[in-house]
Each structure stands twice: as C-alpha cells, then as structure tokens.
View 1 (cartoon, rainbow, N blue to C red):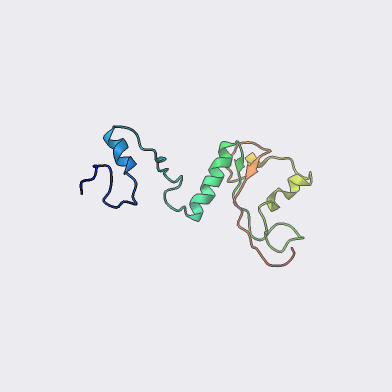
View 2 (cartoon, rainbow, N blue to C red):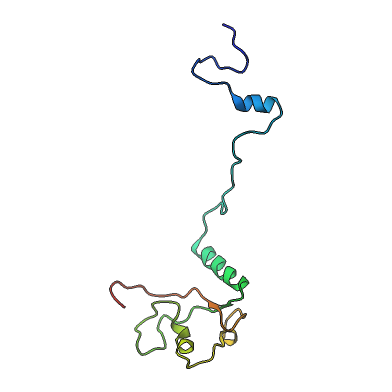
Length: 124
C-alpha cells in the first residue's frame, strides 16, 4: 500500500507537521526551549553572596555578621539580623552604618546583612 510521504504507516497517526514545516523552510510551531536562569544548583554561599550583591547594587551598605552572643542584656543569643541596629532604631545612635568596621559602604540609612543566628523552638 503506497502512502504519501507525509503520513506514517499507522492510520491513527496524523502527518508529521514538524517535518513538513522543516521541508518547506518554515520555523517550528513549538515554543523554543528556555534555558534555566540558574543552570546549576547554587550553594548556600552563592545564594548569600547574590543576596548581598543585589542589595549593594541598590545602594545598601553591606554589614558583616555580628557576634552570636549579642551585646544586649535582654538577649541570650542572636536570633535575627537586626540586633546590631537596635541602638539606631531606639534613637541612641545616629545611622552611620557606612562607617562601621568591615562594611562595604554605601548609604547610612540602608543596610543589608546575612546574620548568623540561632533558631530555637518556642517563643522568643
């Protein structure tokens, strides 16, 4: 049984439209395959660094992680990344983070960090 070149031998299969389009020099109707934004998994250090780089581009001063044992009588350990900013929030200190030791300076009123912290269950 002679079949046209665009049909398969199985009656239930439609013509191969992609082959027809290629033979006619037309682009495929399939959407292009998109490459992943991050082709390889990122390490935690790379994620932290990309976070800090993004905020530095937005004019934030990058502040290094402070001690896990905070300089505060009300805290046993550091539980978030805001402890070193408490004196600024309370108005006891001017917002001068770009002048702190170890920072990547930018704005005094914008800061970002990746603070090491201890997470504990229960209320804190």
